[in-house]
Amino acid sequence: WQSGALVGQYNAGNITGCVVEDCEINGLAAVGGLVGILNETAGERKIENCTMKNNVITQTGSFGGDYDNMFGVAVGLINIDNSTVYFNNCTMKNNTMKTQQSAVLYGENSDSTTVIINGATAVRNAAELQAALAAGGNVVLVADIQATNVVTLAEISGVTATLDLNGHNID
Image (cartoon, rainbow, N blue to C red; front, side):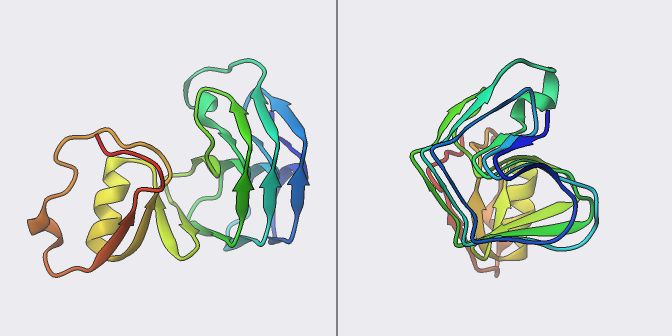
């Protein structure tokens, strides 16, 4: 629980210029290459110019439910309400996730947290996708989205938005 190569739980501040390479990070939940859990202190957070390379992140057991999604190449869980977390110019290369999910930058996040990756709003589900596209700007998928009729053109008429599938699918 709360395992990261840099630290298990990180409560405040920014992370800049860290390199995590050739490491094995193991745990039950909230496991990330840099940080297991970004926790409760409100405010903006930035993770910038960090590299995660040739690491293995392994789920060693299960608490069940959402806990099984709290694994990420950089951060396992973002648990900060009413905040924005920025990932800028971070590199992920040749990382292996031995978990129930594929290699993702971060695992789960609080519903009221906005995650921005290189200037694009990160979305994990159909509701987040619809809201982000309606708001306009750049949007990036960080998970496959399974939904029908996610968004109609009439709902985003007059809005300019760019969607980066980022290797994910909308089914």
